[in-house]
Image (cartoon, rainbow, N blue to C red; front, side, top):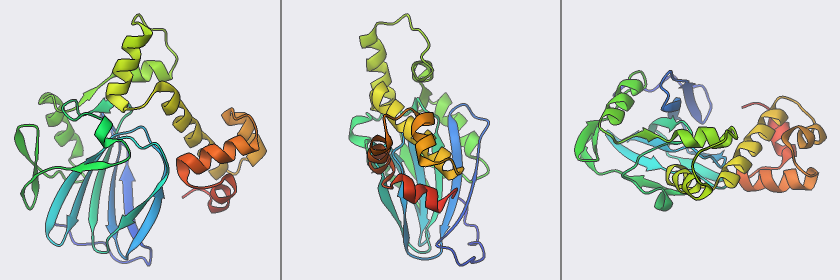
Amino acid sequence: MTNSDPPESTGEALERKARSSDSPFVEQIGHLYVERESASLCSADGHWNLLLVRYRGETSASVWGPTTRGAAMPYRVGAEILFITFTLGTFLPHMPVGPLLDTGKFLPRTSTTSFWLGDSSWPCPDYRDVETFVNKLVRAGLLVHEPLVDAALQRQPQALSQRSLQRRFLRATGLSLRDLQSIERAHHAVRLLQQGVSVLDTVEEAGYFDQPHLTRMLKRFTGQTPAQIARVGKP
C-alpha cells in the first residue's frame, strides 16, 4: 500500500473506490479511507479476502475466510484500507479454512510496509498493482483456485464421488455446497430488492418459500430485513 495522501473529505464516513479485475483469481479490489469513526454491515460471503490496513504509518495484513452471517465491521478514523476479494473457490492452501470462518488471521509483519506469507516476506501491493502481486502468489503456490467450486455451483455433472466433491469443496470454502448456495441466493435477493423489485416478487424470483422465509434468511446472512434493504436501495 502506498503512502498516498488521504483524499479530500466528502463528509461521508468512508471515502471508497473499487474496481473489478481481469485476474481469474480476483473478484474485486477496493480502497477505503476512513474519515470518521464508523461501522458498516457486511453480509455473509463465501469469498476469501486479504486486507491491508495502513494506520499511523504502519501497515498490517490479514487473511479473512468466508463468513456465514451478517456482521458489523468497525473502522478507525484515519485508517487506509486495501482489500482484495478473491473469486469463489480461490484460497490459500497452506492456511486451513476452518479456523478462518467468520474471522481473520493477522500475518506477521516484517517491516512497516511488508508482511510474512508462506516462507517469504512480501511488500504490500498498491491498489493499481494488485494483479502483479496476485500472480506472484499464484506462481509461488500460495494461492490456488478449485474449479470444482464453480462446477458445483453451476450444477455441472462431475466424475468424482460425492464424498470427494464435498471434501474438495470444503477445503476451498469451508462451507457445504448447500450453505454457499443459500448465501448466493440471499445476495441475489438483495440485488433484486435494491433494484426496486417488490418483496413478494423477490420471494418468487429468488426461490424462497414465502415472505417469512425470505426475512429469516436475509436477517441471518445480511443482518437486515427485506424492508430495510429496500428502503436503503442500491448502496
